[in-house]
Amino acid sequence: MGTEIRLTRGEAEQLIQNIEHNSGDASPIRELIGQAQVESVEDEDYITIKKEESPQTEGNCCICGSPGILYSDTCDECFAKWMLSTKRRK
Ligand SMILES: [Zn+2]
Image (tube, rainbow, N blue to C red; front, top):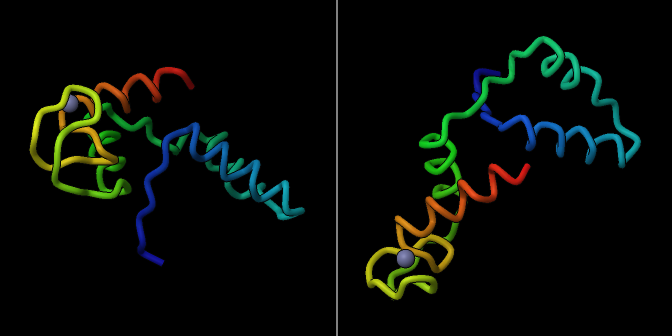
């Protein structure tokens, strides 16, 4: 208890699908979503979360080629654009 897990609505729905796919009971999560207690994650938070989940390396961005810290082989700026385009597709 006390551990805060932040999910986007899409991720929460994915979680429900996974649980139910394995014959689990996802109704507590469904209830939470139904009560709209799953807060919508702001773009900046979303990018921050995704960065934490992504492997960090140093090198040149695979999209624009600029050197520096890379997240999943993309630089800060390209990573943000990439993640937002992924988010909006949902
Ligand atoms: Zn880049």
